[in-house]
Image (cartoon, rainbow, N blue to C red; front, top):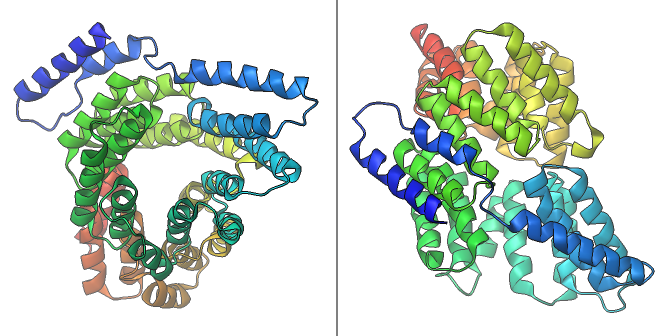
Length: 434
């Protein structure tokens, strides 16, 4: 712990004394942290707990509800450290088994099943599980919180806002974090950040380490999306200093090194290190983008092939559909396959973002007029995601609405950091022609 304290002090000193330039990531700090052994005992504790409850379940002839629920929760939680999607499916199987065994049903298992569904992007199924939880009537407060989360993912903004407005308590962590999500969906980034800062302040003195790590990482994400890069980096670094196996924060730092600093060497080093620690497909995709930026087509194609191979595992279901869609449109030139994914996404979650995929697929399949109609009725002024703004801008340009196209492309360019330098360059080239 003393070493980590010194690292944190060193980081603060360097950040305060660094010259005023565009580079944000302090390479010495990051290299030192990568060399540290894991400072978190969470994984070790989880594995010990898994062994204990597995043994207890075996001793009770697989007829122990408490053991099954404990194991389900542990496997679900371990996924976020292991990156092994099978952990989520094992968790589901234990929850289902426990649900069949218990004589008196409670809402907790349905909420847990819904949480696993959200992880797997099965939002409609999550909604059904929460309906079952609501019908049982116990712990309605927690059911309502999850219903808000799922309604928002399904694009049911009015329902989500109604749930939030009807919460009795509006000055606690639960309310602030969800108000932040709602405002973000509305495109009100400053208000969204303000709510998340209130959530952080609410639990700043908390002894719940995982809650603090979560809120700091999410706030760092939001700062980055709002071009507050230094503040984003500082929070990410605080997180990994406290827990070196909080991988989402590492991914955020890798993105800053690449997108803001253009330090592709360090970004690749972090991502390769992450691949060893936390083998999920996301890092292949980021490495492919960096290779594209470096104009290394061989490396780009290799990483894309690796990503596609991994996410083709049926266990992932629809979790990576958004990224597969972009690859099919931009790299593989397979608009028919892209259309199938867009239609699947609309069925799964009929949000403006899903309709944006559909509109782009229509355009790629030669149906510009229909794509423009969908954009005007289902997308414009309904989503503010930078990639959606970019593609809608291109659709408007193709349809001849140059004034609105320029507005959308200019707005997208304001999120250059979030989109990355490859897309930012493409937007600048498009704007030159307007």
